[in-house]
Image (cartoon, rainbow, N blue to C red):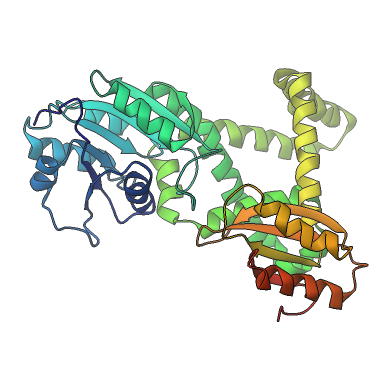
Length: 381
């Protein structure tokens, strides 16, 4: 199979029914206008492995982390050399083993790791993606075009460095929150359970619990494999456990010497390592998140979907409130589960309910948008 310079490459997805497989199909078809062939043992198996390899120019592996190296090696055996003109990519949270497996093929090779779950939007705008270039020549320019189209903030690293970093970015963060979930499960019932704790919440607690719940809501196999399949996680966990053990022992000791050692070891030295500018910026970011949480807790708001994504749409929405003298406390954008861009608008508690209901009615009657949700003023009519 020889790729001609003006030929539009055909894309193959191994694991096309997974979350990222489905997102990639949508991305390649809608964003890049490419033809996509998929194969997945859980539902998309029109083509056998050999037929899929023969049908495509770019083969992307989106299999579960634990299975990916073996799946790639199986495809290398099936390809038996016909892949020499192709580009092979993988989308997994571990890079060394999948990249090494792809390098046993004759294809050009790069490993990719988008640093988020599969997004609702058609691009990765605002999200990082690690790119591990392993063997690239004639496909380099096309890969560059793909990365530009993805709108991801790309960072390049070799596969080993990626996995070492992920032991901290993913392994450590997930481990601490899984442990927090287990501690809450054990101790929260004695103080009223999670609902009993809620009125006492601080910004820090809310943020931590939000991350814990996000992990618990996800696919357990992903979090399991991130811990078990990255060889750099176990040494990290030893260091993490050692620091917690030290803190426990110092708290048990309880005297001024223990307090001073904790302050020096866990606060002062870490602050010095982070750097003064970084800790100031981090503190400010935390405050901003606190303000955001406060906005999201306001009981009176409406969420509006704007179907016309064009300049002036938001202005038209805001003019509805301005014309009625309604003061807005906040406005934030987010996406629904279906991927719709929503604007969550916090409304002053002083606004009379009939006036606000009139504004909501005008938003829909004037075809400005659709009121998706309303709170603190009754259901929109």
